[in-house]
Image (cartoon, rainbow, N blue to C red; front, top):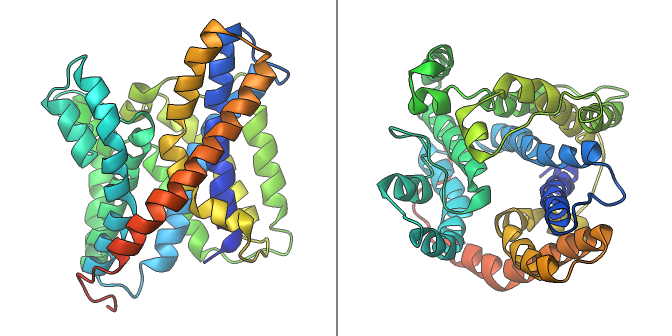
Length: 327
């Protein structure tokens, strides 16, 4: 375990929470608060940091595992918790119409049918790419020679993205960010490699001020609209941040525990922020206070859910031995 990356996971999740809290402040008061919008949009890049970290972690942990053990470990870590937390969102979505495409996107994290469809849980669009990456890694563990076939499919889909949603999804440029992480897992440390962290932060936060920050919503992200721009503007700085962080020595601490809880924070933060928005729309307060309360409430709520719900679920699933671990 690279403990510094565990801490970075929490920071990345907090970035996403922050940008959503800032959007809440804007909706309630018409103001971004003290920090300008051009700075706040960098919070979206927390997703890109997550993707790069995933590439690093999988590249370092998958070797030595059987493909069955790897697939089971990734499944039990991601899917059961996600599906349980998706239930209330699916119920709410069903009131406005919840068709078979929505069911496929939500249950199987596959958004591409005859049209692109996002999962019911708002933040789960990123899990669609996570699961696609895990599936590719599983195939490589089955037979490393299949890697060329996977790269060929990705290249073909990218070249024919105009053919439809399946090609848009399989050829989405965001997948390159996972490849960045895989490359970093094998990259040697540099004498002053920690400076990559500073360079990445400056590049990431400066994107909004120079007018090159990627725009769009969930559907645009799934379809890969402006995908190459995002990889360059956020993906490359995210890789620099991850690489620089890998040069920092860290030990288990409260921060690494928060990093372990970052998945829960990422999944559930929209709930308290959405509920607070209802309050702020009727009783608006200072926008910076709205942001602070939104972030703080989300972290506290996610922490309690992590302790009371996620950890017991992981303990129970961890006792289920389905496949041998050693390759």
